[in-house]
Length: 291
Image 1 (spheres, rainbow, N blue to C red):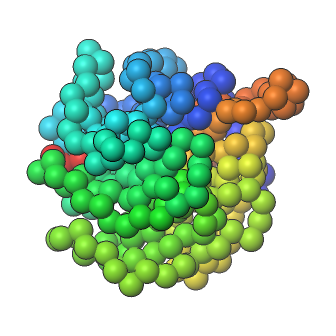
Image 2 (image 1 turned 90 degrees about the vertical axis):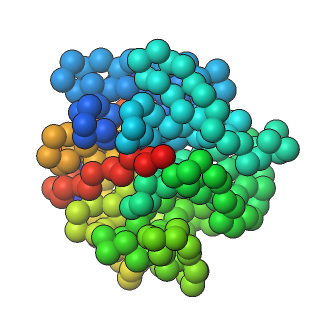
Image 3 (image 1 turned 60 degrees about the vertical axis):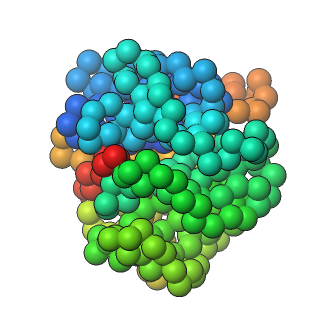
């Protein structure tokens, strides 16, 4: 279905990523991973404030106690969005300097799940980690190529996860009380262009997946794998999506322009920009980090 695409922030982000709506502050956080920035977009003013992280930053989430938590090249850290002050929390891959954190989100219990990848995307070099609310980190599994979208089902019994290197969605039985996962299986396989990247879930329990190299966001039934909808976009490297706005009816979409030639950038003037559309379904409030 063709939809109106509104350019929200026009900028050549190298790897725009990590879009997440903060319902309390009524702002959208997102990042430029390689550009080493956290952004705070305020739709009321149209402003897009930049916070320098001085290292690659893979994802950002609100913190229930105030401020933000980020996953960086050098592990997890708290971030004060007003002062820009960062304080390290934990670095589970201190001994693997070639790796950095990529995408991640909080589970229903407020734990932050985020995965790593080798900077150039070498296969199976990363892992998925969980930062618990007490500040401890556990390694959930390895052999990850590019850790990306992660969401939990409406009944909180299933976790869905994208490793872009596999180009599918895998599911696990999930226990909210303990954070334990088991019974891994593949539920959605990309049979179109591009590669699965960031992912969000709507209020109907379906998932919206960004297509890196596919110029689109697609909606799937995460249990059956059925393709339900496609939003075509004027940029090819689509990286993440998140519902936002006061009623969670806007879908914000990030993109990248890393390694694009001058002619490719000329053909895609919005590459790296933040855009939004109205997909016709509401999203879910983001769970903040509870630690």
